[in-house]
Image (cartoon, rainbow, N blue to C red; front, side, top):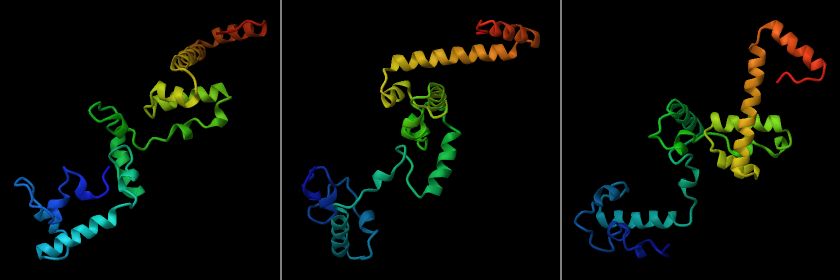
Amino acid sequence: MVEAPEAWTWSSYSATAGKTISHPCLTTDWVLGQFISRKREKAEKEYRQFIQWGIGQNTIWNEVRGQSLLGEDTIVEKLADLLKKHKDIPEIPRSQRYSTRPSLEVLLPDSILKDHQKLMKKILEAIEKYGYHQSQIARHIAVHYSTLSRWRENTRMQWKRLDNHMKAPQHTRAHRHSGMLQGKSPI
């Protein structure tokens, strides 16, 4: 970082502000034309004041969501809907495709960490619906990603078995149920 805009060697500030002669490839007329004054010297002064006014102010870049969305909430929501339609296009970076996804703090609050079934449901939602990587989730809940991967696979297998059980013909399910009464697991 530099103390003043003109201290940055590669900046166009000095030429645009009228402090140095501009490089032949630098066009400053358009920028200066955005200020009220039509006289070059006065426009350069207004430009310097504009830059000075912005130093130390909050930057708009802190408000950018997903590296690409900036604006009022209603505009961002409309753009987010458009991006959701293209969430499977790999050429659009993941951070932009899922720019409005809820944070892991919202998806996986501390209150569900003790309930493994609720936790796994939310983990699968975070991965499949919101595009989070297992490593991101593992860091958030403070487990190794291989542990999370194992949990995920076990949960899938349990759900698959339960699904198969529910699809079985009625008489088979009744037979399995009678086995449960005798202490045998249907799964």
